[in-house]
Length: 100
Image (cartoon, rainbow, N blue to C red):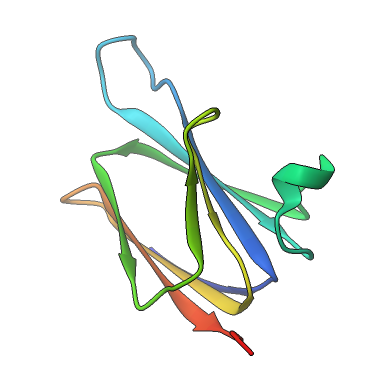
C-alpha cells in the first residue's frame, strides 16, 4: 500500500496491537503546522498501519524524537509518502522537505 499526501509535519507514534504481546500499530498524524505537539493541534488526517514491525525513514531531515511521549516529529514537509509492505510489515516514510 502506497500513499502520498501534502502536509507541513507528521507525528509518528504507536499504540498496542490486537494483543499485549503482539505487534504494535503505527499511528501517523498529518498536520498543517510545524511542531504540532507544542500547540496541542489536531491532525487533519490520521493513518494507522497495523502489526507494524518497524519504520524506515528515507531522505528526511529535521526529524526529532521526543522521549517523553515516544513520538517522532518530522517538520518542514511539502509532501510525504508512506509505503507499507504487507508481507514484511515494514513502513517506509519518505518525502520532500523545504528546509530554507
